[in-house]
Length: 210
Image 1: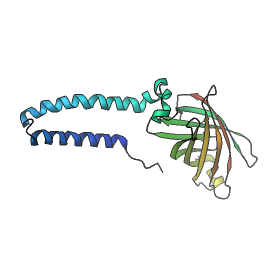
Image 2: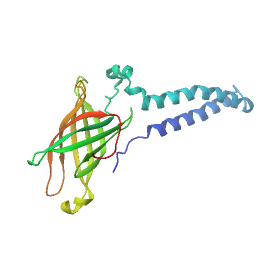
Image 3: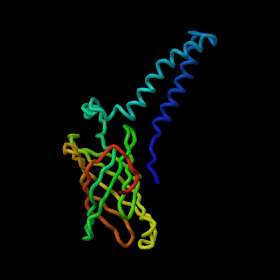
Image 4: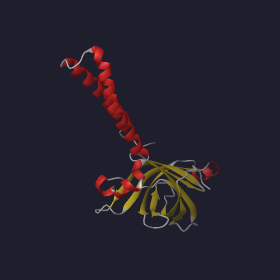
């Protein structure tokens, strides 16, 4: 499963293309130009659209997490920077041993995805959001995920996939920054819940448990 969301990039392309056709039609309808001169005018139109498109790509992937834009986060509702690999521990409330636990966050201005890794299972987020308090000063990473046990222990848990929900408070003023919170699952016959504590390690995504 995956989140079903509006494809913003496709919408931008469609709107840009439609505006180009409408612009061309209006120029000819009101006899501002003719077919022979239309190409040259559209070329100038392209010179306006191209920089905007490039700026949007830069903003979506790079500029939003710079210090300049993060300093204006409140007024622009820019999300906090959660990108990278976070390592720490997961403690199950059933009294079992504390496990090493890892999450990796892939984030742009408009997209957010979380992958989790443990010694016995891995998971991928389905729905992911960042919540805040009323003052928009403290943030919580919230995500619904689907997990699966590793192949060598599937027989132990009937080989079923399971879902869960995690809420992690961002402690961004710590050095290094931290995520701390809780989770619960819907595992059949052995529903689990517990606490998670993670520390940011690096921007590098290893895509595996180590």
